[in-house]
Length: 558
Image 1: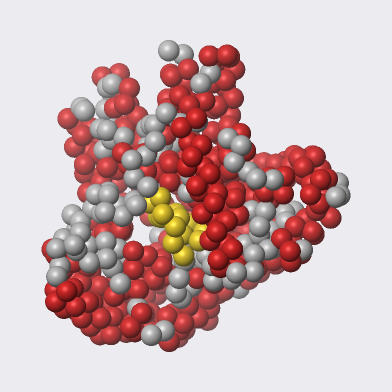
Image 2: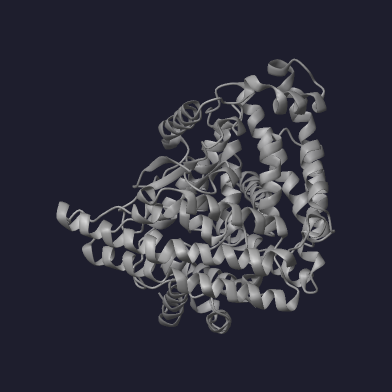
């Protein structure tokens, strides 16, 4: 690789790992192990300056002197570093209370899945946990800065976060997730017992007190200033328009106006109605879309009643997909995908499922996490589409392959291209139908249900954050225009309130991948090979939409 570009790529990855040692620990990069995320304003200012400088220096490199893959590296670096600097410049940490994906709840869900491959890393885990109080104190200080400027989190997110922390603190110390990382194989029984004892001391002396102090500060200092449900969106803040524009760019790598996105969502919802009529007449015995929504939402027979049913359906879908992969992909990941349940405090507020990428050193496989805390929020007809999105051929295939491509800089393997990652996940739901993976027309209705959900996100996310919609308006819209069950609708709307712009990436990304595929099919005609197309799409790691189009176009014109 070009020497300057290689240095910039290494420097950008170093910046990311320095910013979040916890992320590094989860994915198996221990370059800053034993440290903890620095949430201070000073660290944020430093990250903004360094990311902007890296983007500018990379952009100044003449692409004419680079190979094709080097041009991709340059483009991804410019996009990712520049949008990171732009996003951090809107000071999201001053409002960072999120009960669905906030640091406090993500740590609770993932701490037990940390892997310590060596005794040295095991010591680092203890060191990281010992710094938890510092991190939460910094989080509180950033929230105080936001309160002083009138930039505050949504009140509902604060209330839910307080309740989650109360639930965690009431749980048994003996089952604390921070004391359950995987021990090194080199430990004998005595060494592991001693290590667990050290982890337990951190839980009692540092971690739980840190969570309690964070909760107390939220309750005493932030809650009263929280944005009410009728003014949940960013547009109610003085700099809300700028913050939302930065979030849209960060998650989509594009610059559509919120109003344009809003109308795309409305058009997508209307366009799905004919598919509902064609597919629903058989299993639901009606062609009336509103009646289909009601039946899919309210018929108790269409929901799971036990966690075992949820897990069995997910596992069966994964296994069918695994067997069909060779016919649709030439490149397959070397590392496997396992299933796990979302556990502990915050599980009831969490999403239906999510995926955790494999550890970089192969010590932990990719993991498909399923929310079994309330089985009835899972519908039988959506279970297969959900599994295909989150595991195979969705996130696991895309992320694991990206990790294993030879020669990619680390920052490209893990680039924060939500539009690519989530766009592929949604693309995979319909691809699974091409692959013959759905077991019934009822399960195919799950594809339409999820498409309605993702199209509705375009409407409600922009409605909340650009058009001033209240939480109730958003809930009512998604309820009226999708078959999603009430509990899931409310959870999802609350997620969009706390994580602006992220929900736009799914449908916009799917549309772009399908558009790029259609152009390649038209250009190549009978010479189009879907296996080769998929290998090209996944073979560069996560990339911006414009770069993906360029890569596929070059492949199609060879």
